[in-house]
Amino acid sequence: MSRTFYIETFGCQMNAHDSEKVVGTLLQEGYTQVIDEADASLILYNTCSIRDKAEQKVFHRLDVYKRLQGEGKRFAVIGCVAQQEGTKIFDRAPHVTLVAGSSSYRNLPQMLDRLEAGEKRITGLDDRDTDETFDTEFTARNNPHRGYITIIEGCDKFCAYCVVPYTRGKERSRTSASVLAEAQRIAQMGYTEIQLLGQNVNSYVDPSGKRNFADLLSAVGEVPGIQRVRFTTSHPRQFTKDIVDAIAERPVLCDHIHLPVQSGSSNVLKAMQREYTREWYLERIAWIQAAKRDISITTDIIVGFPGETDKDFEDTITLLDAAKYDSVFGFKYSPRPNTPAIHMHDAIPEEVKVERLAILNARQREIQREHYARHMDELVEVMVESNTLNPRGQFTGRSSQNKTVNFTMEPGIEPPPMGSYLDVRIDKIFPSSLAGFAASRPKAASPALLAQQALNARFTSAAG
Ligand code: 5AD
Ligand code: SF4
Image (tube, rainbow, N blue to C red):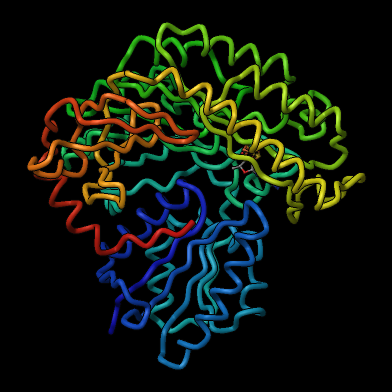
């Protein structure tokens, strides 16, 4: 079992993609990936600390790992909890050998050398001030149909509730040339969909000064073979109209914008240090709604931020009506270490948070039920994401707007290949999905992509 590793990943897409880069680096260093912890000499745990439940999961998993300790295994805790808790992890879980935050991943080969030399306590925690990004050409691509590209790392916004600026370090962008070179490599592998990633993608500043974010988006869309370009996450503060214009002009850019608002109350936004008001945000929503393409809008909302009054919460509910979101990720505020909000007065009781979240979700469900009706009878292009029939006899795909589309095909026709595209005529509307029947034959996925899918299917272990 020498030089084998097992990796488990929690958290956001940035983390999932970081793991792809870590896996690629380990493979390059001569390690072999295994699907069973029992077969691994090195167990890595890529952690998330955005909300408290995620953190509890880490410590629970570390306790589970302890049982494997006797077998001579090494343990590494990486990602946001690693950065946040630092060497305290060694105290709480002495069987851990390596603790590293994401800003240190580019030093992973050296850390692995030290691990192999038998060092017991290795840390990568002091790189958050770096200007460098973790670029590697060895990225392992675990998502079978979506190629991720990090364009900007870190965050300089310091919203009052958020750990990210402390765990992922300062904002730093990659050159547009290196992003485009990676897009080309991905396209050559057979991927047709690319997702540009960053904590704030639209804060992107090309170090070579050649392209702004909207230009980069358009340039990625021009890479031969690419049919869908997505990006996440956007911050309203630097969200400019040229992004909407680029999407309106170019069908290759997916008609979906995730624009976290966090609260509909300008008072709460101020306390959150979001640096915009409700009106400023709604102006950006108006740009999107006025575009000649129907662009779906999704958001993140935190309920129960310290000091949030009934009136503030009401402002969030009325904002839902104005923005007509296609999906909302609602969260109860959770106090995080190191953040200014942890010291704020007027904490909201848990039962009020629970109630507000339930009201938010119920109202949003009604909005989606009404708003999704616009897709009735539409011909929607989907990319096939599951070609085994679900219990209702349907296959599953995703529209350019990122909506789940379940569809049937005429009996006797071969299941469509994963990653292929086909048109679906929508005949049923649900609050968070659409259903219909295939109205075209699948446009075949590339053989290179199919081979990649078969290879990766064995290792998919990303957890929520
Ligand atoms: N409590 C609750 N939700 C949070 N988020 C970030 N930090 C916190 C926190 N401390 C949410 C925000 C962000 C999303 C990724 O997670 O809505 O946009
Ligand atoms: Fe956190 Fe705010 Fe940065 Fe988003 S913009 S990662 S919410 S600090």
